[in-house]
Image 1 (spheres, helix red, strand yellow):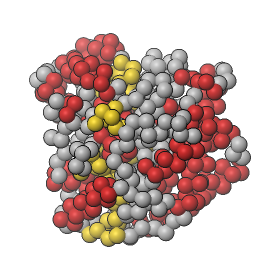
Image 2 (image 1 turned 135 degrees about the horizontal axis):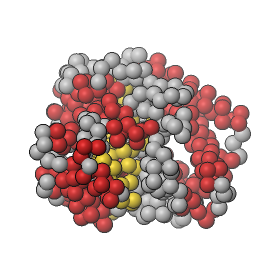
Image 3 (image 1 turned 180 degrees about the vertical axis):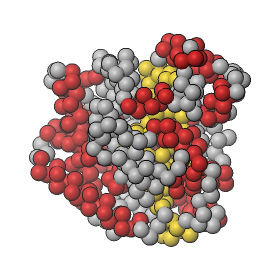
Length: 478
């Protein structure tokens, strides 16, 4: 398969070619590898190639499961999901030699869906930043502007999808880490409901349920079909999301009807929003209204200062717990020189948080979730900017020259909209509907009711049909 043919099709379309025997899995794998080898020296999206394994699997056609994505090449984010025999570094020097001996439940499900894993994508250290510039592997660059961030923490995944290396890639989200880079790179990124995809067998939940798994995709239907293939509990999960009424792929083919949408233009923290991001969300609101939806400017009454303080208590404690957990697995103590300044700062901060303060913080975040839940009884979904600013220049979060505290403050002004859905557990998506005058993508976020990815998929498919983005490609991808 030629490279130009490969980048025109989404995952389901490529799998259909395999099913109809018009192309072999090895041809798709070679097309993807060719694409990665040509573009990755500039983008630095893929940091751990697994080409030999992928080629071996692709040549054994009879051994590839007959799932919905049979033979389609895929990339795994280098954090959280374990692939047996492949390094799992989380972008951190402390883990540079760790190789898991088992597959995570998600990886097992992705393989059963027929996907062929080509390699692993770049992530900031321990997934903590909204930009992908780890000291271990270096920065991932935005395909739309090489001097701008691809976002984080799934920046490598979104840059790979945006540039056409693969039609979709694994991603995860603890405070916006799917939606932030999806906005920066102009791809579709859905964060599922808390507990929709199992974190087993190694984990039950992370940071009280802030973190979820899924993917970045070029098309809405690929995201839906991937969620169909990976959703559902595994034995021993502490909780799981309400089951879907029917396959999400069917929802993509269903009209959403008239929805009532709440438009929120000011984040809970009161952070100023860049004019481009306001224009993007207002444009999306007009588009929704033109499609027959009711759009009402409204927002829940939340204490933004308390929200930010409480979220950071859980975030810092989570960082500390993560490092201590890895120290137990590796059987050695963490050293400051193996971590970036912000990570070490959060680790030390987290170690000072008492158990009672952590549990009280969780109670406070749950109170925020209840208030938002009551607000959502009046609306089918909420519409916000994904980010408060367009993609920032690389180096905007460097420390030094910024102190770790200044980095935290700078992060809060860039990503004030996305963490709320992690706290509430609601599904949320960034949809690429707008590009500014500089040619940079500006995503729009839609937050659905708890457990209701179905409505988001129906709406996303309608928006994709009304304002197609599949032909919008960054200059680097041609």
